[in-house]
Amino acid sequence: MKGMSERAYAAHAGLSRGAIQKARKSGRLVLFADGSIDAAASDARRAATTDPDQQQRAKGGTARQSTAAQRTPDANLTAPSISGPGDSSSYLKARTALTVYQAQERQIAIQKKKGVLVDRARAETLVFRLARQERDAWVTWPARVAAIMAAELSAETEKAAGDAVTISTGVLQRVLEVHVRDQLTALADLKVSLE
Image 1 (tube, rainbow, N blue to C red):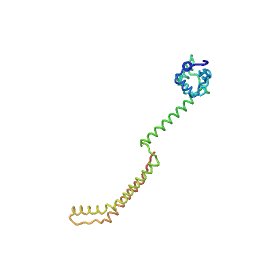
Image 2 (cartoon, rainbow, N blue to C red):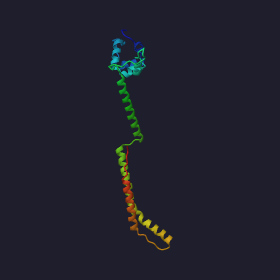
Image 3 (cartoon, rainbow, N blue to C red):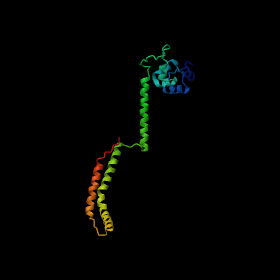
Image 4 (cartoon, rainbow, N blue to C red):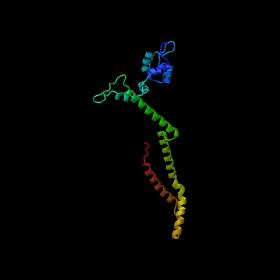
């Protein structure tokens, strides 16, 4: 056996045996002909093919912890960080932003499925259609109720005054139409905002 076994390489790399098995299956390890692991070549290949975030987590730390370790012993101040190929802070920020964005997308998709969130154009169309139906119902209302209201008012006035009083259905209908149209005109000035 020329190289290391999976267990030995796991101890060498500071990783679990399962992680080494995954790396072997995905081709991130260099193997000798006998199937043993070439440690030096595998370390280099894993470093090149594994993202910095995973490398930091595998070591049990984060990028912030490694910067905290750069403190000078005398003044207990943090040394200035040098941005370069080994610096993973911008990668971590981008990865965090991507994760947040994906979580927001999933939350929106779930809300759409539950019916909590609806399409804005569809909602505006439905509101407009409902408003038009209500307006049409109110426009035709005076013609439907004018005769009934005229008869009831005539009966009440006759009962109160004692004399026969006739209220014209046409006059009452025109009065009602004027007042209903005024009310609808006032309501038309209302603007619905879905923002």
